[in-house]
Image 1 (cartoon, protein in one colour):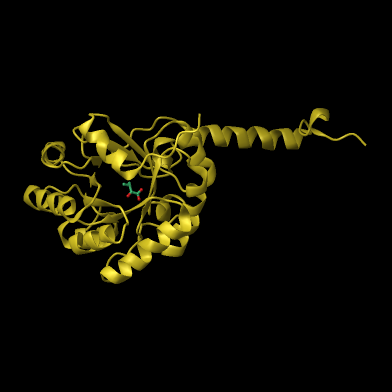
Image 2 (spheres, rainbow, N blue to C red):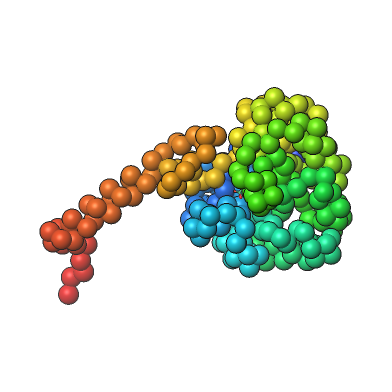
Length: 265
Ligand code: KIV
């Protein structure tokens, strides 16, 4: 039987029910369909696409039009999971009115249900403006990759007091969930106990209400540096290289295409 998509209130209720939440990124229709069939609770069209799809060094270059282009493919593919889309830099920093215009485009043009933005206390006006406009918001505190230059690199964030202020402010402003990135597990656990909205950790230990990973990292598709918090569940890079090499060898030897791959006259 066809199950409708998980809604934002249902996502929030997982915490009270004690159900751990799995979130993965997806950037295209094929991957989104596969992850949806695995019954992942939420799919994030992350601005990490700037690095893992577009090959940039940071998440800063990806544009709103590019995020919408990818989110539309994902939105059409997903039947069951909640679909969340990142607001790319600096689309949530141009005033509340502009943030509503930008996030509004994401919801209107992609069939996705919510946006995620990086920030806590300093984004509280934007979060409440978006929520008042009917746009569900997931906040993101701790390491905020869009602020890599201000933070001086991709570093673990240890300012407990500021992290608690940011998390509380995001909830009070109306966020329905919050990503905690690269913070000590003890602080993540404290925030999780303090909030009524779910915390989704990445590099924040196992005391969060859920976990998120970048799909390319989980599948072993990432070349070069892989953060310590990643668990690689497959080595698809080797599988792909092996398949491509066997194809190349078959083409060179004439073994492909075989008679069964060809049409009769
Ligand atoms: O862009 C992204 O993929 C993210 C997750 C890693 C949380 O923000």
